[in-house]
Length: 97
Image (cartoon, rainbow, N blue to C red; front, side, top):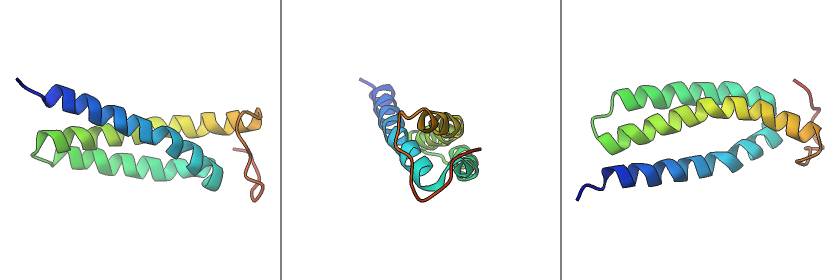
């Protein structure tokens, strides 16, 4: 049997599961400007996936990279959710885009 598909599925599931609370925490502490960090990390991981020979590592880097890109959108959505009162505001900073 070949377990690569199953392993890739598990890795993807874990990475997405990690990014959900990561976006919430990063927005809380750093705000919407953190999208730049997600963009740079996304570019880095996508490039790593292109230059990695190991298939599982390459796929993992690709999933992390595109999860970073998706997190850019989610950061701005999180700002809106905080403004709607669905998540707590950080009292140490001002909100707004």
